[in-house]
Amino acid sequence: VEYIGIDATGIGYGVYENVKAFYRRATAITYSVETKNKMVEKGKDVFKSGRIEFDQEHKDIAQSLLMIKRKITPSGMVTYASNRTESTGHADIGWSILHALINEPMNHSKRRTSTW
Image (cartoon, rainbow, N blue to C red; front, side):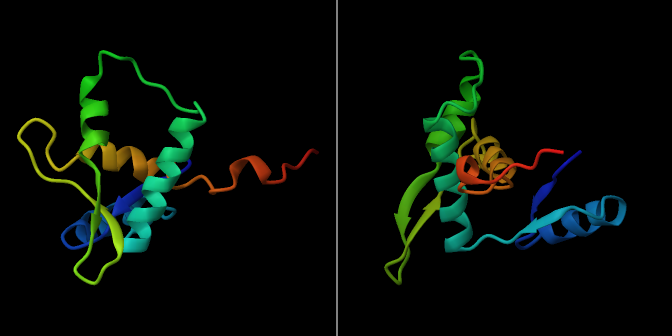
């Protein structure tokens, strides 16, 4: 395991604390407007560049990702949210994919690599 990102907002904090007890490198993700924007922008970058694929029969993945919509907060800020449905939950699969992708830096192609 290289990375575990856990939604630590609200009741998710208990899950994060339990995982952190046996995997010290677990990362808490606290949802905010900024965090959601970073997650969605990173996801768009990864999908548009063709660096991730999934089999077309996994329609639940596409449905869940498509449930995540751009919204405007009451204060006028852009954020992303999803409605809860019986078939996709609260876009749980989509958000979990974005949790994993956010671990990669936004400028992945410009990062220096070391050679030994």
